[in-house]
Structure formats: C-alpha cells, structure tokens
Image (tube, rainbow, N blue to C red; front, top):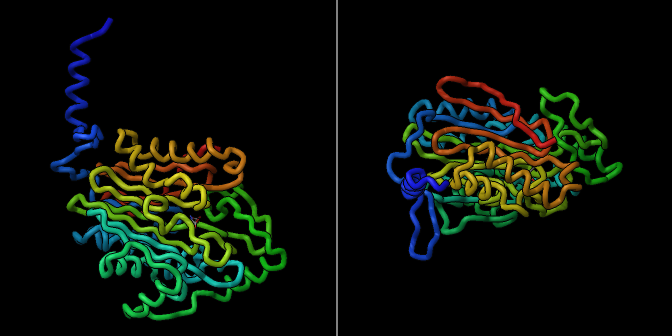
Amino acid sequence: MFNRRKFLKASALSASLFAVDKKGFADAIPKKNNKTTAAPIVISTWDFGIAANAAAWKVLSAGGKSLDAVEQGVWVPEADPNNQSVGLGGLPDRDGHVTLDACIMDEQGNCGSVTALQHILHPISVARKVMEKTPHVMLTADGALQFALEQGFEKINLLTAQSEKDWKEWLKTAKYAPVVNVENKLYKKVAPQKLPGNKYNHDTIGMLAIDANGNMSGACTTSGMAYKLYGRVGDSPIIGAGLYVDNEIGGATSTGVGEEVIRNVGSFLVVELMRQGHSPEEACREAVMRIIRRKPETAKNIQVGFLAMNKKGEYGAFAIQQGFSFAVCDAQKQDLLIKGKSHY
Ligand code: ASP
C-alpha cells in the first residue's frame, strides 16, 4: 500500500537535495558548508602517484592551496626520466617527437590546457599559465611552445637515451598496439610485453586534491600513447575527458586509451554520476561500463581507468582491466597504494 508518511519524507529529502530552476533543470545544491572531514587529501593514478602525492602533501599539510598541490605533485613524474609515460623520458610518437598533453582545473571552474607540447619539462605549469594569463583554455603544439617560451620556460630535449632506444626497437616492426598496463608491480601476470619497444607504452598521472579550506583542484599530465601519430591528442588535456572538477560535487580523472575516454566524455560523466548520488567507485564503474557496452570487443583488449573523489573526501576507482592502482595521501596515511577494482 502507498505509504504517505514515507512519501512525504522522501519528497522533503529530495527538496533539500535538489533545486529546480525555471526551465526545470535540477541541480544538486550542497550550498553552504561543504567542507570534508577527510581534508586535506590527495589522490592520484598509478604507483608513481605515491611520490607525486608526497610532493602535493607538502603543500597541503602546510595549509597550501589544492591548485598548488596538484601542480607541484605532478611535477614529480613529469621530471622523472625513468617514467616513460609522463613528461621527460616519455616515449615519443612514431616519428620520434615527445609530445606532451596536460590540463589543470581549480575550485572555481577555471581551467587551462596544453596539447602536443614539445620541449618543455613541466607542461602542467604551462597549462596553469594558459589558465591564469590568457583568456583561453587550450593552446596547442607550436602555439603552446611559443607561449611557454614567452612565459620564460626553458626549451629542453625530452627524449632520453632509453626512450630513443625503445623507439628504435619499436621501429623494427612499427606496429601500433597499445598494451594493457604492465607497470604495476602488484600484477605481474598482466599483459606481458608482446612487441619490441612496447613496454609501458601508456599511462598518465591524474591527481585530485582537497585543501584544508575544502577546495578541490585537479591536474592531469602525460606523454600520451607511445608511437602515436604525430599530432595525436588524447583525453588527458581535454577538460571533461581526462579531468573534471566541480567544487560542489567532486572531481574525476582518467587513464588508459584516451580515444575511448573522449568518446564518452569520461571524467565529466563520472562527476555528473556523483551529482546524482553515486559513490565515486560506482560512478567510475558506470563510466567504464559505458565504454564496454558501446564497444565490447574493443574494450576486451584495452585499459581505461577512472579515479574520482567527492566533496566529502571519499574516493574510488574502476578500470576495464586489472592492474590499475591509485595512491592516497592524507593525515592518516602517507603512501597508501590501492588496487582499483576492474571489470575483467
Ligand atoms: N590517457 C592517455 C592518452 O590516451 C594515456 C594513458 O593514460 O594511458 O593519451
């Protein structure tokens, strides 16, 4: 039987959670004090997220802003020559150019991005300058480089001897075939290297942080898919695909085969699902399932992972394949590495 009391309770609850504007669009309104009990907190993708989080934590634990924390956090993998999927030492495109993609987003919805940027150690900082010093959101390739040089960034060679060697090895077959991540030490069995030069051929650092004031920012930076076509841009610098932050709700970031993330506007989707009340892990799972449902055969052989955090500082992740890890750092745990759940 219809229970009127329950119904009244339910409608009172939804009235408190949602406001409906004149056109009938509902929007979650966690308006007033939105602070999380978990803050400050920082999370980021893959094993290399641990070292990146440590750098971000220095900023956060000193009372710094989440925007500074995510920028300085991702500097670590960007500057690491042994990390072959981000920044310096990233594997090049098929013609030997190291081209970098990065974006950053703050708690006010400001964002900046660079795509296919060469010769600059910290693309994330160029993305931040785009956000802060120009009326634009994205700069690309030569234009992004010109802007970076004008802003005082140094021009360097990003192709390390090791990455050049791997690229030359790859040229022997020149077969473009992204392999599911093999970097994670926790998963020795996952996807053995099948082709010459094809080890670690993609991965991205995506980072989300909430500072002591309860404000969230995010950063995402990568050298993209190894041996891609010259000029290829992935999901990582695309606001809404590789990264999205809505300070009222939470943030999300992605890693894996970027084309599938772009097709599904993945990170925006995850945040919108959290807005509808899903937990971060559920939201990531649903975004992964969209990719799988659209292209089940493709999805069997690729990796895509999402990582999300809501305003309460609750976090979660989900990936197509096993092997996706993420790192968490807050006042209780400084170097936690979590194995993300996966569909397969
Ligand atoms: N998402 C990145 C890209 O498509 C690569 C990765 O994270 O694995 O460029």
